[in-house]
Length: 605
Image (cartoon, rainbow, N blue to C red; front, side, top):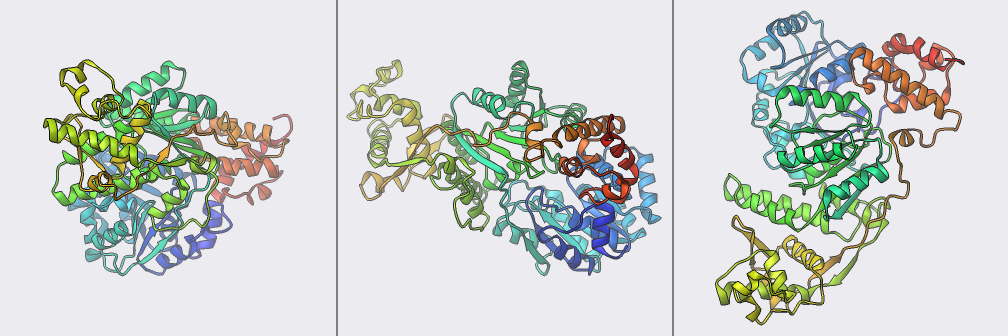
């Protein structure tokens, strides 16, 4: 095949490219190198899959997603594309068969884990066949400035030296300008053409809630807005993952754990259930999710503060790949800030590394504390400007108030100062708040803190409000966290507040409204905007797809995405020719599933 548009139509079943796809495909087909930034769900994979089918030879895809390679190959095989993979999960016989197919030119695409390129046998194998292009997926993994650095990616710069005439395309969903420059430098792609798409995902509603019994808050979200939906819940620790998954299961929510502490068989089984079954909730550390191609994830919830905006964007981007309304929800509190600051202070690496981590955290805190449009703040981080408030984030739906917190900040900072300078003592937030509220606790009496001049001067705020003040002082760099016990100390910037040279604006917490168009089930989301007569047909098609997927042992979306079933239900085609005009129905799928779909659509089916 030599025409990309023909491949798009006949293999993938789409009539037209989206966004920059056509320009990227044509550039790579012509032999050019490319660095592609495109949001999750934007169609990055087509940007290398189509050139691999058009150019002579085999497209080699370098991907860290070993656990998902089988699903990626299954999805391509369903389209009639000859695909294979080489990774550590295969036995020698399987690897030899794939290697023989590659050398014989019987593959269109070959997926490799980056660590395999460290083994000299792999480059030697690639030299025995004909490589049409190198695609470096999840390219942000090469960047130590980004959020998911992997050392194995550093060696990929050698591809150009060994195969100077083979085009390379590096792809990622998240990268600031600094990360982008580092990717280009480390992969020898300085001369490549850069394609940067909009980072906006308008179907995702971003919401950040004050943390107050987070598991209960999560359960309320699931029951009131996402009953029966598939979703991902991120926790910081393995222990928290296990406890949250167990607790959700006890509450009647089908939840599974996923983290590096589980054996590989359990991880694989849980991932397979999440991908193949409807309505499963995966509770995970950030070890889970990269490359997950499940289109109908309706929510991503964070029970702990992400370390960076890039990580947060990457993780929340796993929701709503099908373009339907989805939720990104985060519970965030004072302890999160203290914990993250402590982790940075005790992290391995030099001062420059810790400064980078601190910058990442500061940007994440700014996103959490903003009183402006949340989406606008998020996009600004990636250098993109939103011309007007989005109307679909919590700060747009329930605009937060800001207030002059200068006096409150002075009181709290003064208490920290007096403990440090007068008593040579440092304490955590709880003790300082008790002092300001005039509480004669055992600890206050033990240390004679009721004798301080600041004792009882903060009774105009309650404990929750004071915790909000502390959190925001930490976020603004007016307080620091030190040591294993999370004690508080002043910073250089504190002096300007205490000296009345700086005003402190704080955000007043308000109850967050539920979304305007709250849905109760995944099916409700999928049938939104469908004509009344098409809704039951869509459900019939979903039932057929589920049965077919079970029979073939693949995720349902490998058969067809919801968007394709919606169009079939609406158009109600009566012939294979009509069915072939539906977006997402290529020639191979038409031949494989066409008659079964027409039978499902026929009266009395």
